[in-house]
Amino acid sequence: MKIILIFLLSLSMQFAFAQKKDPDAAIPAAQEIIKNADGVVKTKGSVTINGKAVSYTATTGYMPMKSEDGKLRANIFFVAYTKDNVGDFDKRPITYTFNGGPGSASIWLHMGVIGPKRIVMSEKGDALTAPYSYTENEFSWLDQTDLVFIDPVGTGFSRAAPGVDKAEFQGYVEDIQSVGEFIKVYTSKNKRWGSPKFLAGESYGTTRASGLSEYLQSAYKMYVNGIVLISAVLNFQTIQFVVGNDLPYPLYLPSYASTSWYYKKLSPEYQAKDIKALTKEVEQFAITEYATALMKGDKLPKAQYDAVVTKLAKYTGLSETFIRQTNLRINLAQYNKELLRNEGKTVGRLDSRFTGIDYNDTGSSTEYDPSNTGTISGPYTHGLLNYLGKELNYTNDLTYYTLGGGIGRWNYSNVQNKYLNVAESLRKAMSVSPTLKVWVLGGYYDFATPYFASKYVINHMGLRPEQQKNIDFTYYEAGHMIYIHMPSLKQMKIDADSFYAKTLKEIK
Image (cartoon, rainbow, N blue to C red; front, top):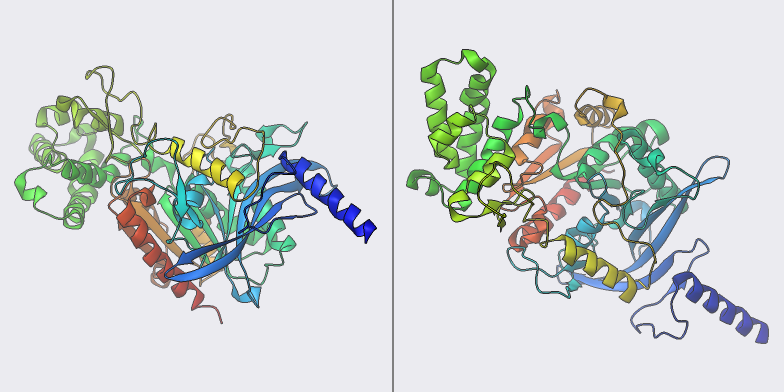
């Protein structure tokens, strides 16, 4: 008995040292805390979803990533949630999730929509007064699937190993390989090869998810059942406003129209329409008359030029004089500065429902993005770190890189002198795995990854009719972070339940 007591005391001291916490600190009674041999921390929790309590085990810590000769290359930080009392994990789905940037931690999907806790914000999505708080997330997807939130190297607490250049992980190909390796190792260590598998990404995370869909198949013969693309960007040509690339202008137009409608800048005729009817009309104009006019360039006849100017003014609320000054090509920075210029306000990029104030009202671009600075970064970073220490019993002296900071120059060597386009990777994955389901979510007020651009790209993937049936589109009256808008968050849960049910129905 004495030997056992000494062993337990030693284990307790090792645990306290590893976590840099006072070994005498009180542990919440509701939590059962276990230290794994790998150094991760396990805690018990429960969340009520759709009126039913879901008990789970949370696993927090690092996954060491090693080369085949055993050399440590990186430590990837993750938080995983596994439902308790599951008899057969081969029937329990698992979803690997991550955010974008590149350079963003998984904090947004973790604490915004999918995980068992969420950051408390206003109904619209405004930050409340600091110190910020989190609450139980009754809209979590944990009742449908186990969850693994991954912070790629250079984000969150994830770092390259000492002596290893972080540039080895900072590029499209390098990132796909390291995150793919993590998914393979986690799947093997936790005996989840038999589970239905899903990928869920947001923003550049949708780029990563699309690339992984093919990479996991080719590198490890791992076939996922479903992919969730939130605020998707698959072809970077669609969002690059550069001379000679006319593609973004018609693809952003429906989002411009939505935003002008939101601020009541359209004529009574168009303000009377609901947002779905308005965007449907604008989409049709964008891919027909407007796209054709841009293709004609300087040879566009004056009468046709004037007609396009008139319609652009109607759909955006901007003056015909201003539209002529842009030569029919209103880039995002110009729109965000011009729409509310007379009111001394600017429009947000991540979410155009938010406004800011610049030093002065001149110029053709905004000083900052009011939908990011002071709106979401602070509450989410504060809330996650509070949650990690308070409930998951995990602390770390490193800086938690929420968005940027830990990432250097991103490497696109695989598409040098070209636009990155991962739609072909997704098409190949869908061809190899005919039952693979894809769910694309977009916000009408998202200027970072406009919803119509992702729709355009997917409609140009060359999918056969039977493959097209495996893709669902859902749009919300929100911005890039769809879920900060409470009505959209509630609807996302309903739609997620439907997507998982539809996908799992295919498994025999």
